[in-house]
Amino acid sequence: MSDAEKKVFLDAAQAGTAAQRKRVNDDEARGIALLRKEGMTVTEKVDGDAFRKAAVTAQPAHHQQA
Image (cartoon, rainbow, N blue to C red; front, side, top):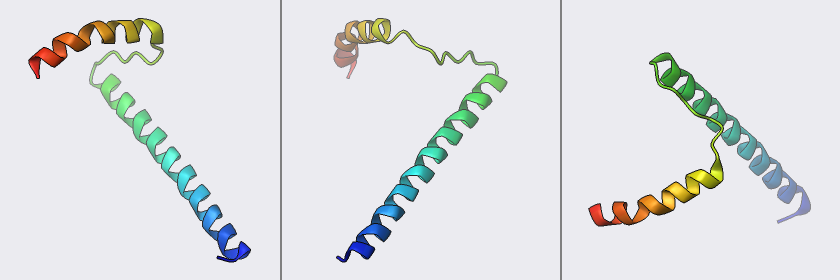
């Protein structure tokens, strides 16, 4: 591939990445807004350490159900 072709390919990949990220962010925002509108409490700032600890303790019970 020539340098010009490589540049076109890279530019297209970067544009696709930016478009996909925007789409995901927009979809997430719409989903959260809908859940709130329907009365759900949405927690966006999560204590990551506490969540990981709770998830680890829940894993054995989940695996027993599977």
